[in-house]
Length: 471
Figure (cartoon, rainbow, N blue to C red):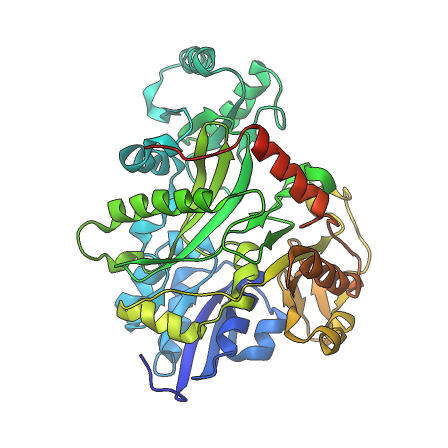
């Protein structure tokens, strides 16, 4: 660990508001004088303002990122990767081997989201009860369309039609089809299946899981994991959970480690399952290739117990934005401890947080198209920080600072506001106040963390509650 007060150079590989939250948390260090070296997808105004050096790499190519690190390696103490694409493509392996700069993210081997099929097989080995029923359809295993169709029909005869159809490899949220959302007949289901299968991909069909979702995150130094509070993400585009799936329109965290619709033992069950996965991957002793956040786990709490929807090897977006603003520990110190293998407990203030995203007019199907002005002015939201102080955070995401000095919305989630409060209702009002004061052609969900939405989750859990799954 570095000496207190010394200058520390940190590489941040950035895509979206998640990276702004990471930079914000690192910049609040009281023990270190932090300098940022940002490899960014575009000229994010927050990152440009905070960076000692900023480079735009639109495709986040690992080789180009490595060149940037090589050119500045004498000033960089470590790097942290926020998006999944460079992790899957081995950014840690390449940067560490070529420059010697330590990276906080798992190696390519442990980019667990690289294969949905491998995830199911891993869970089958260490905590099979957390898996839904599933079947893998290997592209090389069938000689004709009729043969694979018979196999699909046979599996549906076993478990019913209500399933999810998934490509093995990540598709940036695309490709996954769910009964009732994307198809309502077997023929439509097989059309969706064929669109994946005919591209050469193996396909996973698994039972559709109904229940209440929570997001679980944990830091790791290779020897141990340090868990963070649970969060609840809102994937659907519109209020009342209508519309298509998105990257996440917002999320909330309660003022304790579990969510309002959960009990403490539900949270303990999540920890127990993740610890089983960690021990399976770690083996005996330590496995520093897992360093970073190898477990961002989407849990579904069902009538059959806790199930795992998916696991990712990077911080959640928007979920990490709920946590980092209320981190008690010096985040630079936490990063050094992960690298050095002496990570201890990470603690958060007993505060609630609500994240709300503002997005472009044509995002999530709100408009078919929008050809108007895409300028966005955040000054009104920033002015509110005089009123709320650190209880309001503003994290630009898919925004670009251009040569004319103005900021513009790009194609994805534009900016999020984080409200911090004594309870969810207070945090929500602060977050929404921030959103309302952003000037631009953007829209947002209005029910993130709303009391009626939370109470609906509570009632659903009471009817078909998850209460202790034995595996």
